[in-house]
Length: 144
Image (cartoon, rainbow, N blue to C red; front, top):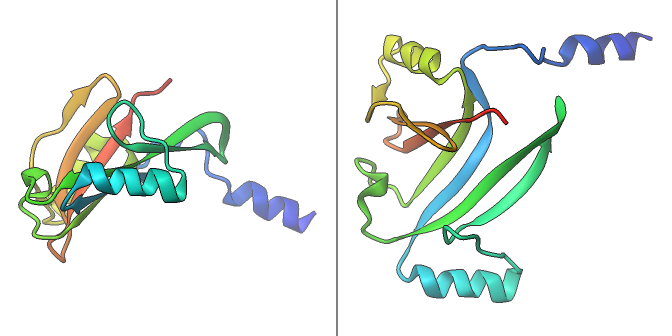
Protein backbone atom coordinates (compact mmCIF):
# COMPACT_ATOMS: atom_id res chain seq x y z
CA UNK A 1 0.00 0.00 0.00
CA UNK A 2 2.86 2.40 0.87
CA UNK A 3 4.52 1.66 -2.48
CA UNK A 4 1.26 2.38 -4.29
CA UNK A 5 0.91 5.67 -2.39
CA UNK A 6 4.44 6.74 -3.38
CA UNK A 7 3.78 5.94 -7.03
CA UNK A 8 0.68 8.10 -6.97
CA UNK A 9 2.33 11.07 -5.27
CA UNK A 10 5.41 10.91 -7.52
CA UNK A 11 3.38 10.90 -10.75
CA UNK A 12 3.00 14.42 -12.16
CA UNK A 13 -0.48 15.72 -12.77
CA UNK A 14 -1.60 15.74 -16.40
CA UNK A 15 -2.70 19.35 -15.85
CA UNK A 16 0.79 20.43 -14.72
CA UNK A 17 1.80 23.62 -16.55
CA UNK A 18 5.03 24.31 -14.68
CA UNK A 19 7.50 25.85 -17.15
CA UNK A 20 10.12 23.13 -17.53
CA UNK A 21 11.83 20.59 -19.77
CA UNK A 22 9.77 17.41 -20.22
CA UNK A 23 12.11 15.41 -22.45
CA UNK A 24 14.59 15.45 -25.31
CA UNK A 25 13.23 16.40 -28.70
CA UNK A 26 16.37 16.04 -30.76
CA UNK A 27 20.09 15.54 -31.03
CA UNK A 28 21.86 17.50 -33.76
CA UNK A 29 25.53 17.50 -34.70
CA UNK A 30 27.91 18.60 -37.43
CA UNK A 31 29.28 16.33 -40.12
CA UNK A 32 31.88 16.98 -42.81
CA UNK A 33 29.68 15.06 -45.25
CA UNK A 34 26.10 14.65 -43.94
CA UNK A 35 24.90 12.60 -46.94
CA UNK A 36 27.73 10.07 -46.60
CA UNK A 37 27.41 9.96 -42.81
CA UNK A 38 23.65 9.36 -43.00
CA UNK A 39 24.28 6.54 -45.48
CA UNK A 40 26.80 5.01 -43.05
CA UNK A 41 24.30 5.15 -40.16
CA UNK A 42 21.58 3.66 -42.38
CA UNK A 43 23.78 0.85 -43.71
CA UNK A 44 25.53 -0.04 -40.44
CA UNK A 45 23.04 0.84 -37.70
CA UNK A 46 19.73 0.65 -39.54
CA UNK A 47 18.69 4.27 -39.02
CA UNK A 48 15.88 5.19 -41.41
CA UNK A 49 15.86 8.81 -42.55
CA UNK A 50 12.57 10.73 -42.76
CA UNK A 51 11.47 13.38 -45.27
CA UNK A 52 13.59 16.02 -43.47
CA UNK A 53 16.76 13.94 -43.70
CA UNK A 54 16.66 13.06 -40.01
CA UNK A 55 15.93 9.86 -38.15
CA UNK A 56 12.90 9.85 -35.86
CA UNK A 57 12.68 7.76 -32.71
CA UNK A 58 9.14 7.45 -31.33
CA UNK A 59 8.23 6.67 -27.74
CA UNK A 60 5.18 6.88 -25.50
CA UNK A 61 4.79 9.38 -22.68
CA UNK A 62 4.73 7.30 -19.49
CA UNK A 63 2.27 9.74 -17.85
CA UNK A 64 0.02 9.93 -20.94
CA UNK A 65 0.33 6.53 -22.69
CA UNK A 66 -1.76 7.63 -25.68
CA UNK A 67 0.77 10.39 -26.43
CA UNK A 68 3.59 9.51 -28.81
CA UNK A 69 6.75 11.62 -28.56
CA UNK A 70 9.41 11.86 -31.23
CA UNK A 71 13.15 12.44 -30.88
CA UNK A 72 14.89 13.73 -34.02
CA UNK A 73 18.47 12.69 -34.80
CA UNK A 74 19.90 14.97 -37.46
CA UNK A 75 23.18 16.00 -39.06
CA UNK A 76 24.15 19.48 -40.19
CA UNK A 77 26.92 20.35 -42.65
CA UNK A 78 30.01 21.43 -40.72
CA UNK A 79 30.18 25.22 -40.87
CA UNK A 80 26.39 25.69 -40.81
CA UNK A 81 25.41 28.72 -38.75
CA UNK A 82 22.37 26.93 -37.27
CA UNK A 83 24.25 26.32 -33.99
CA UNK A 84 25.60 29.91 -33.84
CA UNK A 85 26.59 31.69 -31.71
CA UNK A 86 27.79 28.42 -30.14
CA UNK A 87 31.19 27.15 -31.29
CA UNK A 88 30.25 23.57 -30.30
CA UNK A 89 29.68 20.73 -32.76
CA UNK A 90 26.32 19.63 -31.34
CA UNK A 91 23.01 20.99 -30.15
CA UNK A 92 20.30 19.37 -28.02
CA UNK A 93 16.62 20.11 -28.54
CA UNK A 94 14.62 19.88 -25.32
CA UNK A 95 10.87 19.32 -25.32
CA UNK A 96 9.29 21.83 -22.91
CA UNK A 97 5.92 22.85 -21.57
CA UNK A 98 4.71 26.44 -21.13
CA UNK A 99 7.50 27.92 -23.27
CA UNK A 100 6.47 31.55 -22.74
CA UNK A 101 6.64 31.27 -18.93
CA UNK A 102 9.90 29.31 -19.22
CA UNK A 103 11.50 32.05 -21.34
CA UNK A 104 10.38 34.67 -18.81
CA UNK A 105 11.92 32.60 -15.99
CA UNK A 106 15.16 32.21 -17.98
CA UNK A 107 15.33 35.98 -18.60
CA UNK A 108 14.87 36.61 -14.87
CA UNK A 109 17.77 34.21 -14.24
CA UNK A 110 20.02 36.10 -16.67
CA UNK A 111 20.06 33.35 -19.32
CA UNK A 112 20.93 34.52 -22.86
CA UNK A 113 17.91 34.19 -25.12
CA UNK A 114 19.23 34.00 -28.72
CA UNK A 115 16.00 34.73 -30.59
CA UNK A 116 12.23 35.18 -30.21
CA UNK A 117 9.76 32.36 -29.80
CA UNK A 118 8.63 31.27 -33.26
CA UNK A 119 5.53 29.22 -33.99
CA UNK A 120 5.31 26.59 -36.72
CA UNK A 121 2.75 23.90 -37.59
CA UNK A 122 4.55 21.43 -35.30
CA UNK A 123 5.27 23.67 -32.33
CA UNK A 124 6.96 26.68 -30.80
CA UNK A 125 10.75 27.10 -30.78
CA UNK A 126 13.30 29.38 -29.15
CA UNK A 127 17.08 29.14 -28.71
CA UNK A 128 19.09 29.90 -25.58
CA UNK A 129 22.72 29.61 -24.46
CA UNK A 130 23.80 27.60 -21.43
CA UNK A 131 26.61 28.60 -19.07
CA UNK A 132 29.17 26.61 -21.16
CA UNK A 133 28.34 28.37 -24.43
CA UNK A 134 26.18 25.56 -25.84
CA UNK A 135 23.23 26.65 -27.92
CA UNK A 136 20.05 24.86 -26.82
CA UNK A 137 16.84 24.59 -28.78
CA UNK A 138 13.63 24.60 -26.74
CA UNK A 139 10.54 23.13 -28.39
CA UNK A 140 6.95 23.08 -27.20
CA UNK A 141 5.07 20.65 -29.44
CA UNK A 142 1.55 21.44 -30.61
CA UNK A 143 -0.88 19.37 -28.58
CA UNK A 144 -2.49 16.63 -30.66
